[in-house]
Image (cartoon, rainbow, N blue to C red; front, side):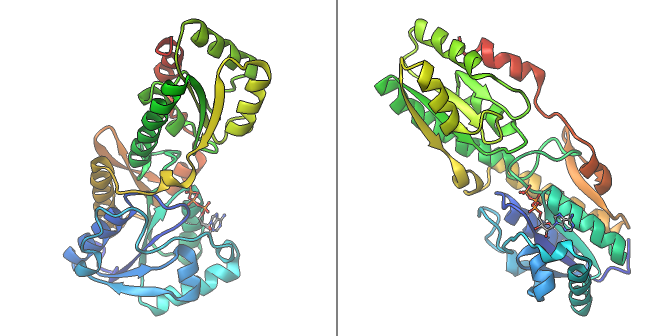
Length: 328
Ligand code: ATP
């Protein structure tokens, strides 16, 4: 055990994701169980710079396991990108007695954590918390499963009204660079077509699919559009499709930030607990500048540098092929 660590600082940063609270709870309780003190840093890196830091104990994290969002708040912090900002942050956390960090967030958060840890030789472990599922080194990120369930629920509801009116719906889901939510939810929701950032689909190709669906007497059609699709988002796609194909009345739904909220699924609660527990255990074992993640059913670690540098194509080929087959 690394006895030089006396107080661990935990924070959430970047986009919030369901499961962050369950993860904070696991970090706090594991650290306290191991005889360490814990500080909660509010608003991510901004809280380090503003010295917005609270003392936490086991009771500070009572009754939060099931809550969406993050009790520690989150922020995007421009000042932390400068050496002066990070110097101030270091000065403030040192003054609080924090000598190790657990960072819950996405790739931006890990980039900041990696730089900070090197500059000031402070141990840090990252936990992948983002609904996008876009980090190398973990099959799943915190919040992804819950976001999928939220999107599927929305697709089912839209399907009811689409089928009643014989309509074509374009549903835009989150994912600027990652089509994980779009592909997964498109399959689970029985979408007729799925547009992904990783794979270009031309408008003519899409129209051909829709024409086939109409010929086969489908009473409703749903197209899932990831926000990062190269055609420019659901409104643009709908407009361009309707110019050439007006068989159905077309509607657009942008699911937006509701995908970020809600009570975490059981999968996310368990993942959050395992990753929070593993993060503290690894810190106390003397590990630093690593991310904890899930591979298969095992908790694994990946150097932060590698997690940031490596690109992983997370879309399974069979799922991409299946989108055409199961939509006939
Ligand atoms: P999400 O994937 O949900 O967007 P994220 O962690 O990638 O989450 P970002 O806003 O990209 O979110 O990053 C969070 C914070 O990390 C930034 O606001 C900034 O304070 C810090 N950060 C990002 N990149 C750097 C960098 N190159 N150097 C220092 N700090 C950085």
